[in-house]
Length: 115
Image (cartoon, rainbow, N blue to C red; front, side, top):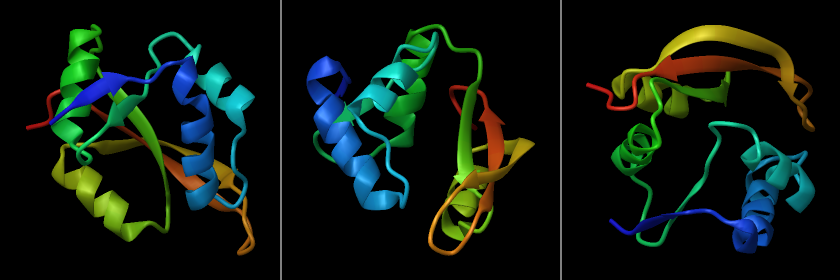
């Protein structure tokens, strides 16, 4: 599995991908701001997604925990994350805005190396 940390050179790609999957997509500046947050990073996977690669990179960077948000109505993602050891620790009401209205995001937490 080949992975590398995202850099400024990847901002256009990350913004384009975000636009494919979200009604209210983020531009390059928004993604740059997110990645400038202490502890935040993105991986560029050249041969497929792998949660273990992500968790391993987080651990290598000194992470004690992983946090993510997922739409409350995204059953497939919730099942995937639950199987990887994530648990709900919060809720952001109206976090996702779209054509179907506002949806809450569930905040999930896990250790970097889920069991």
